[in-house]
Image 1 (spheres, rainbow, N blue to C red):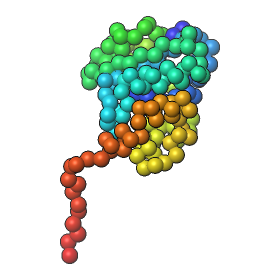
Image 2 (image 1 turned 45 degrees about the horizontal axis):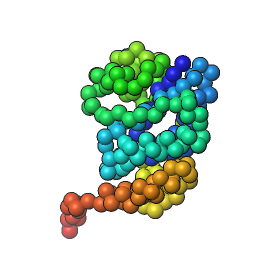
Image 3 (image 1 turned 180 degrees about the horizontal axis):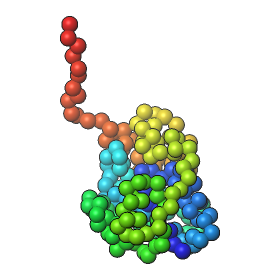
Amino acid sequence: MRALYLGRFNPPHNGHIHAIEYILEQPDIDEIIILIGSGEKAYSIKNPFTGGERLEMLTSLVRKRFDINKTFITAIPDINRNTIWAANVIDLVPAFNVVFSNNPLVQQLFSKLANKEVREIPLVNRTEYSGKEIRNMMIHGGKWKDSVPEEVVKLIHKFEGVNRIQTVNHTDEIKEIEHNKV
C-alpha cells in the first residue's frame, strides 16, 4: 500500500526523518509519496526555500537514509480553496491509499471530502523539531544545525539559506511604538 506524507519542509528536519521512518515501518506500507506543500512559495519567513530547493533537500535526505525505490517526492502549489484541495492533490500525485498527517484540517479534508484513510504520526521532540523554531534559531543565531540532518545543513549553506531568512526577516515598515502617557 502507498502512503502520502505532506508538509512544507522549510527546512526538512529530524522530525521529518522520524515521521518517514515511522510511516515506512508500518507493516502495510510499501511506498511513500513525500509531498511538498506550498511549492510555489519562497523567500518569506514561513517559506524561505523554493520548491526546487526543498525538493533537492528531501531527495538528498532520502537518498542517504531511505530506500529511494520506495519513495516519490514531488511538490504542489497552493490553490487556496480547501473544499477542492484534497481532490487537487489526488489529481496531481501518484495514487495513494492512506494519508499520514497530524494537521486537523488536512485530516478532515482527506477523510471527509476525499474518503481517504488518515493516520497520525507520533511527534518526537516537537519543540526542537519544528520548522518555525528552526527558522527562528537561524534568524537569532541559535543552534539550528542540531535539529537538521547533515545533508540538509550542507544544502542550506549552499543556498545561503540563513542569510536569506535573516534578510526576509527585516522590514522597512514603520513599527508602532506605544507611548506611555505621563
